[in-house]
Image 1 (spheres, helix red, strand yellow):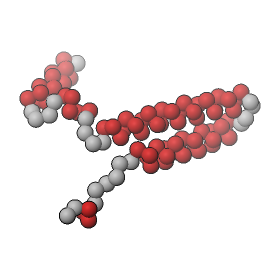
Image 2: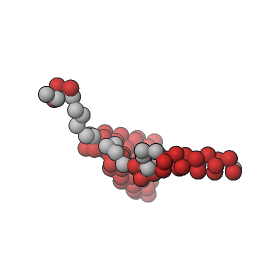
Image 3: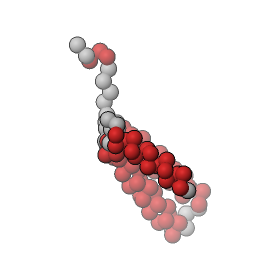
Image 4: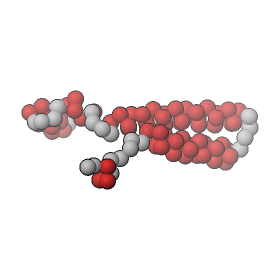
Length: 95
């Protein structure tokens, strides 16, 4: 355990002495994208859980509940990626 602590302290010290700081690890072009997608998926998981619990209370078979939950999560993943994707720069756009 002390070895892991020393390694972590060395990593932090190297970050503080280098060009990047600890605060820079969570910033950058892709960090907000991941955060938005993660929030989108958390909402989808909560929705899928609520639908699954409601369907279970109504007496729906577990097989169909699993299928509906997978469909909800798949659609949410596709929608989340398409809504949070940032446009890419192509070489043709540059003068």
